[in-house]
Image (cartoon, rainbow, N blue to C red; front, side, top):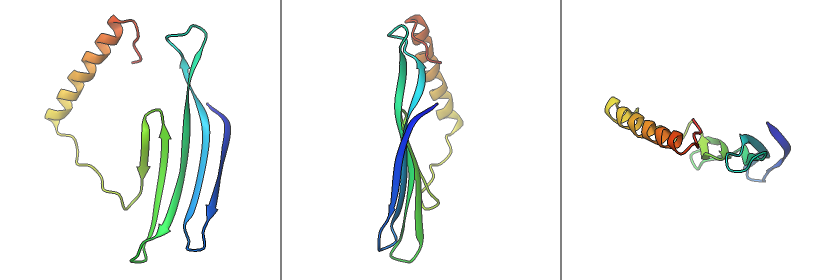
Length: 108
């Protein structure tokens, strides 16, 4: 759910262009406060500029309760996660979920 969006943008004389929108996102019921909801502020937008070699660089981004997440064709991409590492991550996450269930605070 988007609530009360706000935002704007600008363009400079040297061709830097930026646009951004912000809003409040409803995350659902607050497990620690009966009848209350959890909210997160979200900012999303983009900016672009011309690199010294003449390439137009564009970055799209979103910043929310999970952090800042930029994307752009010029950004490096991480290597794939190996099966061994994924198995370890799955075990860690399963342990976290089990502990949340035990503590009656599962967000899974």
